[in-house]
Image (cartoon, rainbow, N blue to C red; front, side):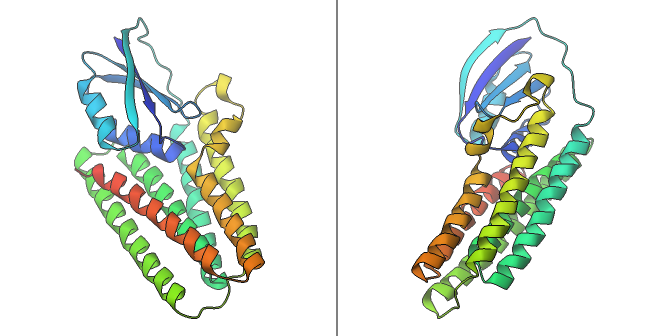
Length: 264
C-alpha cells in the first residue's frame, strides 16, 4: 500500500471535496481518501502507481500538486456510517438557502443575493450528484453531472444579462438591509455546513477550526454581499451590488465547468 499526499490550493470547502471524490470514483487501486480541508491537503491510500490519480486531480483545475508518495503499513480504514445522512443535511441547507436568497434577491432587487443563491444551488448539485453516485453507475453519474453543469451555466448567463440590463438602465436601489440580513443568515448556514461535514471526519477534528471558515469561498462571497449592501447604502448606487453579482456569477460558471469535467 502507498500513501500519496496532494496539496489542492482551491479546495476551500466540502463541495470541492465532493467534486474530487466523484472525479476519483472508479479508480480501482484507491483504498481510501483522507481530506484535510483547513490545510488543503488530500492523502490518497492506494496500490500501485499514482499517475492516474494525479492526472484526474489535475484535470479539475483546483490547483492540485503532488507532494509525496511513500509506502505505508495502514490497510484498515474506518468509514463514517452517517456520511450519507450528513450529506443530505448539508444538501438541504444549501437548497433551502438557494430558495431563500433567490426569492429575497428578486424582492430586494439585489443581483448579489440572486448570484449567491446560484452558488448555493451549485453546492446542492455537487452534494446531490455525490449522493446519487453512491451505489450508482458511472455512466448515470456523468449524465447527471452534465445536466447540472449546463443548467448552472444557463442560469448564470441569464444573471449576466440581467446585470447588464440594470447597469445600463435605470433601476431602483436594492434593499441594502435585506441584502445584509439574508447574507448574514447565509453566512451562518455555510458555517454550519462546514462544521457538520468536518465533524464527520474524526473525533479529533470534531471541533470547528477557524481556518476552515475564513478560507472558504462561500463565506467570502457572503461577506462580499454584505459589503456590497453597505456600499449601496453609503453611495446611494446599485453599482456595488451589480459588481459583486458579476463576480459571483463568474465563480458559479467556473464551478459549472468543473462539474462538466466529471461528465467526460
